[in-house]
Amino acid sequence: MPDVNHLSGEVAWLAFALAGVFGAVANRANFCTMGAITDAVLVGDWRRMRMWLLAIAVAIAGATWLEGAGTVDLSKSIYTAAKVSWLSHIVGGLLFGFGMTLASGCGSKTLIRLGSGNLKSLIVLIVLGISAYMTLKGLFAVWRVNALDGFRFDIATLGASRSDLPSIVTAMIGSGALVKIGLPLLIAAIFALWAFGSRDFRASHEMIVGGVVIGAVIVGGWYVTGHIGHLAEDPRTLEEAFLATNSGKPESFSFVAPVASLLELLMLWSDQTRIVTFGIAGVLGMLVGSGAMALATQTFRWEGFASVEDLVNHIVGGVLMGFGGVTALGCTIGQGLTGMSTLAIGSVIATLSIVAGCVAALKYQYWRTG
Image (cartoon, rainbow, N blue to C red):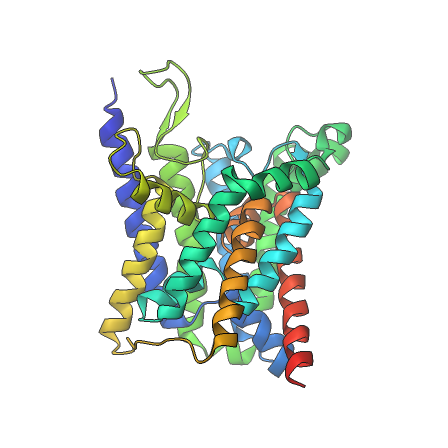
């Protein structure tokens, strides 16, 4: 009989270790989706965007290999459900993208900056966590459920049992395993080839390493929760279980809802039913990894708000990220990497909406200052 408590602890510690690598590498390579979009839109520098696409390519290839080998069943994740809440993905993604621009970075970048001594990010993180919790279980949840989540389309009408692109194409044209494995690998190859198509990017060795390692960390997260933490029959319930995950399903890294879960754990610490989950450990690991890299490279610097307007922008950004990230089922990492690794239609919608929201915020800021 498996030791459930031991396995749950193992899942949490592995999440902490993987996120520590993520934080350290992202700090060193300056990995930031908002920064990548800003560079491309404002100055025409696509290197960080290519790093993000390379990370997605590695994540897609790795997730496809895990599922093809029968190691992880991605059909049981929150991303590939047959019913897709398209309006929630669009609205949540737009608000998250707008918010992360006001707050100078997404959830993962906020953790990275906090690890480097940025006290503005501490305020953003607290506001984001409260907003995310309200969207999961509080006032914002009522708005989300009543106004957005009811708008869905059912992939079953196309003959598919799950909402990822390979399953939909397979249902429409057949070919089975050839499409389910070949199509993701083809898409991953296209992303990787585009990333390496730039001479400037090929010369940016830190960015190449950053893209590969961060993509591999996402794959590692799937392996930890979907294989190591998977019990075909939990001895306590006699049902299938994925240990130490907030969703109760296989998952990889995301940094919005887990921040809310961390705040809840700290507030209800004496409740013995609360445990450190994969997501919570990931948040802590990201902080520690970034902090360690900042100290090692002597880039740790205390930083505060420059003005009241700066404070207001970051608070509003935190609120929008908390609401948007939960509503869209993920952030630039939760949807933009973890969700995209499954090629779920909802993840594609959410990721494109996040990019659109970020571009809109950049245009708004340019208008304000112009």
